[in-house]
Image 1 (cartoon, rainbow over the protein chains, first blue to last red):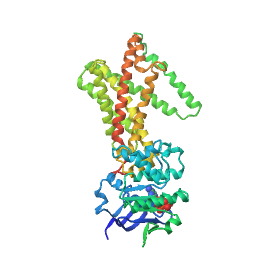
Image 2 (image 1 turned 135 degrees about the vertical axis):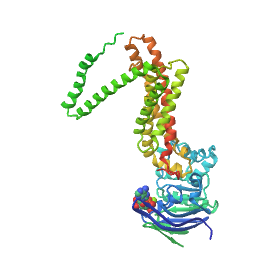
Image 3 (image 1 turned 30 degrees about the horizontal axis):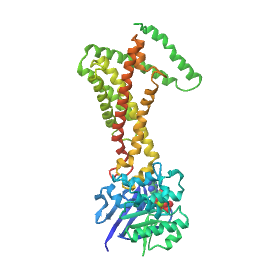
Image 4 (image 1 turned 60 degrees about the vertical axis):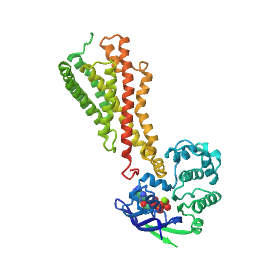
Length: 216
Length: 251
Ligand SMILES: Nc1ncnc2c1ncn2[C@@H]1O[C@H](COP(=O)(O)OP(=O)(O)OP(=O)(O)O)[C@@H](O)[C@H]1O
Ligand SMILES: [Mg+2]
């Protein structure tokens, strides 16, 4: 089987604290994986390593046939996009946030695409010019999520992105993520503690006390 | 000239130190030791500088003048560095920033004929430029440190979106440059209304016509704007990378 991402004996240690132990993980292209496990187990740490936001202390991580160290971290992060647990928005307005992915690529914001993305997660065009301090927690969460997919990454790493949403909006975001996975072939790994999401998972993986358990 | 400060009058004026000492003892501020050290240092340093400058002005040698300016720049960089704890290469960065800001500003002043290339003009003016640049850079460092701490999450999110290091830091860098420059801009706005600044006061004190004295103050205002803006921008653009590691992750 050809893996898009492959981890072998990945460890993460800070001082004498061993946070991840010998993680082996094969992630096929196009997978839609639900990652769960007790709080403090190391889920966020694992995804941040895969996102090149922090570096493993030992082991190998291969992305698309090449070791992670061989990529320029900036270009790599545009392909393997991590959305934070409890993100903060930056700047003044929603538009500041959604223009950012264009800005760093020296492009002008594609307003049509941005509005479509807002609609896809149940937000209206009006949101675009709203000051970020006026947004509810669930609205912020969705705006943050859109920042990650305006330019489609190969891999989307989602850290409890539906935690602040009501049932209705959870459904909307799920449907949209499934669409990204099935239609746009974005490989997705989604961390969650939500029982319904875990029950509905295609592929389930668990991180318990720094060790990964993959369930078929 | 009516300048009458001699050793006797200075000795009598030292009574003023007793006022500060008295307050410290009376209010149990615990500052008496620092006051004594501060006064002794000030007197010794100023006497040394006075005799040194007298010597340098008299020999009027190009290399000696440049060496003195270099010494001023180095001391300014050393002090600026102390305000950026945790920033690697802060001494080298400060040195370059103060050297360029002082050099460019002095160059313009000399070429425009505002000051002459003689030690008695070059050295005091270099000191004013370098010390203002030093304060601006110190403020900019402090601002970088506190913003990278307070806005950590925002920087991480920009990086996660694939931003380059400058794109992830630009808002912070701009704010730090602004912080470095703003005292100079603020004082330019109030100069003459709130305080009679040092250059102008000194000339008036020495008996120069106020209308001539203000010309020098105008020159000082211009040169400090140039020095603090150059110093802040160079220091900030060189220092922000220190907040990231080799893997372009926030430290
Ligand atoms: N930078 C760090 N310094 C010290 N400890 C850390 C650091 N990052 C993570 N940890 C520790 O590593 C462990 C795993 O943290 P992590 O955030 O990965 O857990 P998690 O599984 O995502 O938990 P949650 O479900 O609560 O989000 C925790 O005990 C945490 O305290
Ligand atoms: Mg977590």
